[in-house]
Amino acid sequence: DSGVTQTPKHLITATGQRVTLRCSPRSGDLSVYWYQQSLDQGLQFLIQYYNGEERAKGNILERFSAQQFPDLHSELNLSSLELGDSALYFCASSVEADTEAFFGQGTRLTVV
Amino acid sequence: QQQVKQSPQSLIVQKGGISIINCAYENTAFDYFPWYQQFPGKGPALLIAIRPDVSEKKEGRFTISFNKSAKQFSLHIMDSQPGDSATYFCAARNFNKFYFGSGTKLNVKP
Image (cartoon, rainbow over all chains, first blue to last red):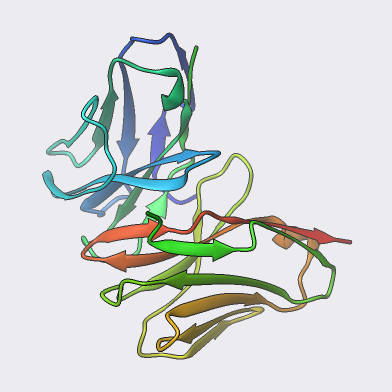
């Protein structure tokens, strides 16, 4: 158990809908990362937050947004969902912005 | 454009054999190279990592070999065991961003 908690574990929703994925980092970790893992794209970095501020941005679509709250948990919001958004979404956390990250077990999103 | 290229896509090794997974990169600004192991239904877990000022790092049966001039690094799993069967990802870091390889699915036959 990495100590990173993601909810929900599974999510099935229809195209055009909006969902929110939640991540609780390890105790003491200030940095949170979001990744998307799909069969044909591998593990893609989406976005990183450090102590509530956006630190780095990757291949995150405009339909997606994230934030990190004062208690350091983070949420990834996915809107106007498309079939191609079906994937595993992982959250990872680290103590500092440039130290190694520990991954949660992921949220499997299925868009039908 | 994939920043880190990983090969092979899949690998079958007999128990006791050596598993070798290779990664290559172009960006010389990368300053940290971790390897992750992922079992089905689980998140990736850090296995071993190396910095570019070191040519080799060994932890138990796992060894990273790093060739800075060739911009390549590889993971060697000695005495491979069925329990090592998993997907392995190499990664490289640049300014807080981690770029992952496409993954290698390792199957160790008993």
